[in-house]
Image 1 (spheres, rainbow, N blue to C red):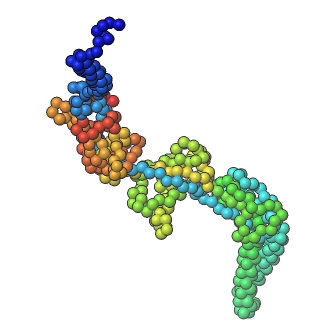
Image 2 (image 1 turned 180 degrees about the horizontal axis):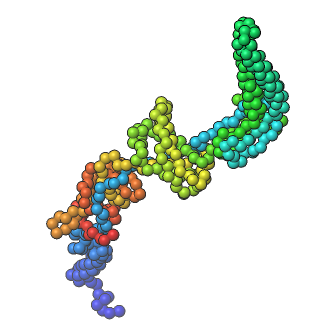
Image 3 (image 1 turned 30 degrees about the vertical axis):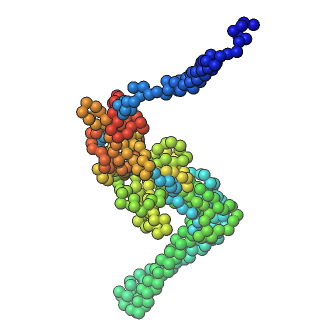
Length: 388
């Protein structure tokens, strides 16, 4: 072994070695602890560009001009289609049903015989009445002859005046009896005629309620007849709409049976009898259906366009933003020096139609309202207006 290594270390040399090792260790620890800090500082240090105000970046938006609203409110109501004429037909006399000439679904014309009752007894009564009429007319002719003869004899004073007066009275009585017999014969003929049930109007047989061989009485429905050439739509309308509905309203009807087909309609009647429980009145619409496609009893929806009641402004529905309080606001663009900025305005919605909204307050005609890009805007934000 080297003599120096085997020699005991002197005190000054021992202190030098320990001091050098300690300094080296401290420097090593410092490098380990400082390096991560330097790395984190390098990753998270803000740059000069990120410290800029985000408002300085303009938002690209599309705008539309605020115009006067030329449309009124539109609302829809559902109701039931009813026939303009619908009748439950009953026989005109009591009797036995002999023949039923129609069935449910048959189209009939006014005057067409639908049901016949057995007229045998009525015809016998008619024959008796006719015979009585002939008898009365024969007696009338004889009374007329006797009266004429009495007048001729009375001129030569060959007959008493009282006999002439008696024959005149007999003539008047014979005339009355003949008139009564004729009336009785006409009544019996009408009774025979009433054993048939004719159609009172053109229409469709909706129900057949009797068959041949049944005994029916007056007032008992045997058929239901519905006129289909003109159909009405009955609606229950809230009472506050009564004064708004007049001849200027434009109405379209959508029948469930016809899909998307629209039919024009006009107001036929406004029945101002309000249901105190429903607070509604009856609105009856006359639907134009020349092809007769509407079916009474089915449902339909009426779309009613009212004329503008108050002046308003029209904007696109895309411009509206919902507020936390339930209201609506829009952004308009204004020139602020060399920049164009967005300004928020609260609006009140009146009504809507075809993507356009009529609003009141907060806007002026000719202003530019934001319809695209408004979700990213706030008050005073610079904007860049793009062509739509």
